[in-house]
Image 1 (spheres, rainbow, N blue to C red):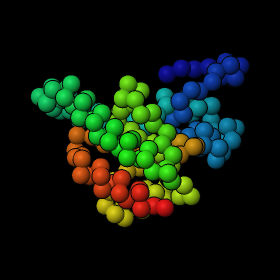
Image 2: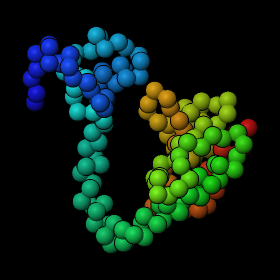
Image 3: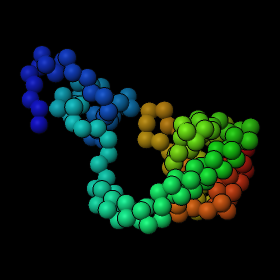
Length: 163
């Protein structure tokens, strides 16, 4: 816990918004004076306790499967996704193609369709994806160990059909 007087708080800048009321400031939905200063300085991000509780089992699984093979597989599926999206003239890919610069998340836009609508259409087809929870939002895929090449191809085909 940190205490500061008004003069000290005026010299402080929050870097990562918490997912409390100050997140609305970051999104431009409310003004900073509408949120108590302490909320601006609360540790940022979303605290996903269920994911933290699962960490020991996840580390054990990764050690059993071999960390290098897991990394290779995730890069393979993400490369397949990025390469497929990059071929579509109605899609703008934001994630770098290089596996050295990206892994795990693939962000993109579909011309004329907002990210939330892209996600809704994909969910309607039984394909799980999300949009980024930021002011400038993008549709995003997160290919992982639970996916296979056919699922990636199916998702890409659905995006290709959004013209």
